Amino acid sequence: MFADLSIGEKIRLIRKDRGYSLENVAKDANCSIATISRLERSETDVDDVTMYAIRRALGVEKAPLTTPECEQYMGRMMVWGQLMSSLRIDEARAMVTEMSAILQLPYERSLSLLYTQMEIRLLCHDICNMPLVKKMLAESEHCFDEMGEDAHHLFFSNKGLLAYQQEDFRNALKYMFTALTYQCQVSKGRESDLFTYIGMIYLRMARIHFAIMYFEQARQAFGGDLTNPALASIETNLATGYIQIGEFEKGRVLVENALAHARRTNLTVGIGISYCNLAEIQRGKGDLDEAIRHVDNSLYQLKNMGAMYMIPLYYKTIYLYELKRTCECLSLAKEGLALAKADGSELFILQFETQCHLATLKDPEAENFIENIAIPRLRELYELNYALYYCEKLEEHYKKKKSGKKALTMAAIARDIYKEMFSAIDYDTANA
Image (cartoon, rainbow, N blue to C red):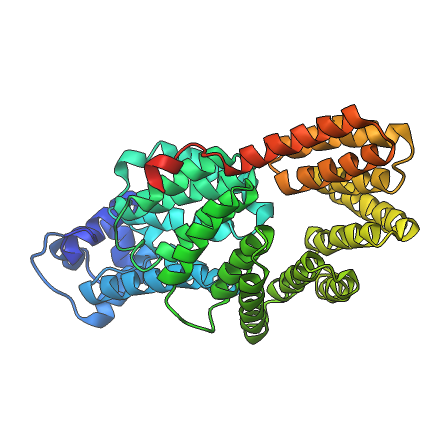
């Protein structure tokens, strides 16, 4: 993978790339021009002290030039990628300066492009970096033919992550499945990552059975390191899938495992989401008081986490509504709506606004909002479970009002949503 050049050839290419003359380098390295000239022509060797002085004069004293240094660098590159896979992001960020030394070597074009894709992957772990990720990926398009297989693999998975963040789920699947076709050094042993991403996309699109299939593959491909926070993420998402299809016992076992892993690795988000899942299990079993107890634990864990906090807050409004505590539901939904507007989240704004209308369903304006605004928009956003929930609530409401025609309309919409949830989408048949 590294350029097959002599040390002298490497020195010459670095010097010319930086626009340094032999005289400049000789002066800064405190050696003769003739020595450097012969070194560049591979006509002589120099001792370690002189070589370090030359490298320092060129500004590449930390770049991998010798064979042992190159081998060590590639080993560190794999460690860097593994830290990202293990969600040890602070440790991965601490390696950026060390790994970026490859950019100092003009002849290592393929590895420089690989480094860039690794850097993009690291940036993907913070949603605030998405504009920069988009820019860097667009620039990478122009260098695609120069990339090796490892960089291609990362390029497509990075494109998939960007598309996922932009809620372009069909393209996200396309890119992730393309990344999966590359069998290379970087992808080896990291299949679990891609299966997890694919599962997350399917989960977000409410194709729950496909999501479960890929999360199960992710768990099977996982290395088994119980200290790895990624395991908690896999089991949390898998539990979510099983809970959504009513497999509460399977979900409970997975949630308890995920909660233990999240506590072991101090993953606060994992702890908070696990409590959300426990709440949903209790709701599915009809114990709404216990569901509220768990969701309150989730709210405590996620209280300083912005959008994450709104997930259990929204769940709690549902539980309060189902307990017929509509005044509390309305008050909490208004609180959530204010937070969602401050955050700028369209989905949470829609969800909390819909809960406000649900709590005042006797108002014809509330009926109209839920039926003609909330449900269609939730379907567009792939929030099919919530669209179903509001269909069911409106159907119940219309039956109580003895509005049979409207009740039948809502039942028909619910059937269409069920069909959509179990329908295949692009790349299912070709890649599943």
